[in-house]
Image 1 (cartoon, one colour):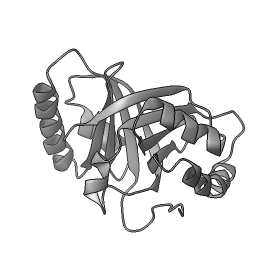
Image 2 (cartoon, helix red, strand yellow):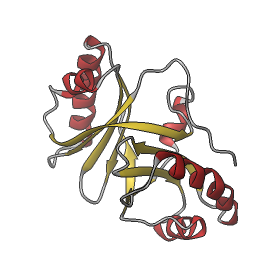
Image 3 (cartoon, one colour):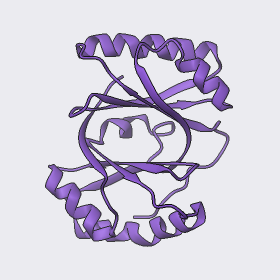
Length: 185
C-alpha cells in the first residue's frame, strides 16, 4: 500500500474538534446540514464529520482558504469547540472519493512527540505503511496530521478494537485514544 500525500488544487483543510451534547443523531445531522450551509456562505466546504461514540467528540474537516474562514464557517455551531487546527491529509481523500469517508469505523488519536518534524513524520509514515499488510483484516483509510504536529487522527476500517490495536503495533505507532466512530452526513 502506497502512502499518498494529497496535493493539488484544493484549499487547506482544518480540523474542528468539538464535544456534542447528548442529542439524537438526527439533530446532529440537522446541525451539520446548517453548518455546511454556513460554510458554503463563507466559501468553505464541510468535507466530513465523524463522531467518537464513547465520548461524544465530533471531528469535522472543513476545507477553507484560511483559519479565519474556517472559524467563521463553524461559528454557528451549537457545540463546545475545543480546537480548530490546520491539517494535512495522508491516504484516501474524501474529496475525490467521497464513498471512502464512510468506510472508517475506528479512530486513533496520537499525540505526537515533541521535536518531531513533518518531514520525519511523513518519512516514517511512508516506511511503515506497507507493514499494515501483516494485519489484512484492518484497512488504513486516512490520517489528518495537524500542521503544528500536536497530534494526528488516523482512520481505520477494522472488525474490532483489538484488530486496530494489532495494526498499530505492527507499524510501531502509539495509541493515545481509540474510539469506534460513526460517520455523520
